[in-house]
Image (tube, rainbow, N blue to C red; front, side):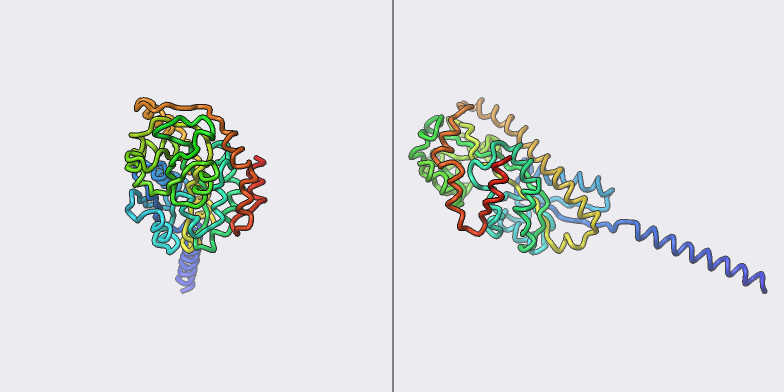
Length: 335
């Protein structure tokens, strides 16, 4: 009897240790999650290439405990629709043009100020530092968590009828711009005649003369097939276009601290990938445009554009607006 009790005691102790060890292993294992990431762009666009890279990076860094389902090419709606879906939680992670965020998050307008950055490389270093975090610090109030800032290209000028060597050459020029007050303000101040049109109207507008110019990176001209009527291209570096990666707040809150860290770190890595990819695609696109007969002005008088705007004093017209932050602007200009 004593021997039986001893055997039972040993068995019970073994079971207890087994359960304890099993619980320890279970608690140390990360709970697997599946998240959706979306770029409205087509499969050849840099934003879509970037989310596919992000999927690869996250799944590798998490040892497969975070699965990413990537969608693109308008599957889940246009930029505005997708941003709304991400805020609602239908989409977990969005990577879309920063200008689209300004419809509900005004502070992102800071990044649309003209001549704020000298180059895309400088923009990457600044927006993915504490400055970027400051700009998007209040994004959670909109239901989103800021992850990183990627590249959508530097804006230059391409024309159908005249080379642009200085600001005097854009006087009266009918230039197509996005439907944004910021762009209209800039080109009006430069002396041109801005025409606000949706991107899908641009090629026709250039063909029929409604527009005589556009302000896009070489990559965009080729990717969007809007260069058939373009004769001249000038590298004026007047505005940088960002692409913001953000996540639904509730989806974020469900993750462990380690998973959140992985998503954030790999979002910054994916942002760098977007900058590198656009740089490569711009080189290829420039060659395509040259073969199509486009004449390039490599060194236009950029300072003449800045002088026409009055330098950084141009920004003061926005000083009374809630989104404008002089301290952030000064920090960027000091870099």
